[in-house]
Amino acid sequence: MRLQGKTAIVTGAGSGFGAGIAAKFVSEGAQVMVADINAEAATAVAQGLGALAQVCDVADGASVQSMHGAAMEAWGHVDILVNNAGITHMPGLMEDVSEADFDRVLAVNAKSVFLTAKTFVPSMKERGAGAILNVASTAGVSPRPRLNWYNASKGWMITATKAMAVELAPFGVRVNAINPVAGETPLLATFMGEDTPERRAQFLSTIPLGRFSTPEDMGNAAAFLCSDEASMITGVAMEVDGGRCI
View 1 (cartoon, one colour):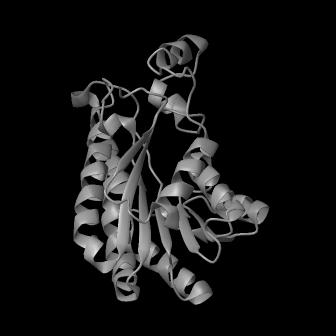
View 2 (cartoon, rainbow, N blue to C red; view 1 turned 90 degrees about the vertical axis):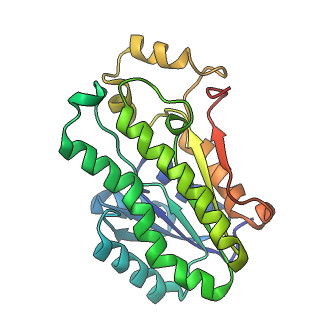
C-alpha cells in the first residue's frame, strides 16, 4: 500500500501501459482517475478497478482543464499525474510522414505535457508536494530508423522531464520519466509496421532479456517512482527496457 491516501490521474489509461499503471496504483491504495480519449475504454477500465473515469483529449487545453476540474471536485487535490497518453506514426522515411501525422504526434506526445503542466503544476506548487511521471520511450534514447518524428517527440519528453524537475524541485514537486521498450499494447503493430512472427522476432532480437515490456512492468516502475520511497529521485528517465539501451 505504498500509495495509500494518494490521488492519481493516469492519462491514456483505457488500454496498454496506462491501464497497467492504473491497476498497480489502485492495488497500492491510490484513488485513481482513468483518463482516456476513448470514453468506452476509460469506463471499462475504471469500472474494473473501482476508479473514476474521465474522457480527455490531452492535446486540447479545454479538455485538460475539464479533467483537472473533475479531479478537484472529486478529491480536492491531485498528488500524482502520469502523462502516459501517446501515439506514433506508421514507420516510414522521415520525408514521407505527412504534416498532419507529425502535428498529431507532437500534440499528443509533447504539447500534452505542456498543457497538463500549465493546468496541474500551480496547485501542486501551492501544496508543496506532487509527483509527475512522463511515459517517454527508449526511442528517445536510442532511436529506431523510420520512426523519426516519434523518436524526436519522446526525446523532447525526456528533456522536458529534466527541465521540469529542476524548476519544480524547490517547490517539493518531483518529475520523472520511464522509458519502455516496445510492449504488448495497441501501439505495437504500428511500431513494427505489421504484426508478424518475423517482425516480432526482429524486434525481440534487440532486447537482451528477450521479451517485450508489459503493462505490469510499467505499473511496477511507476508505482515506485511516484511513491514516497522515491522521495530523493527526480529528473530521471528510467529505462524499463530489458536492456535495449545498453
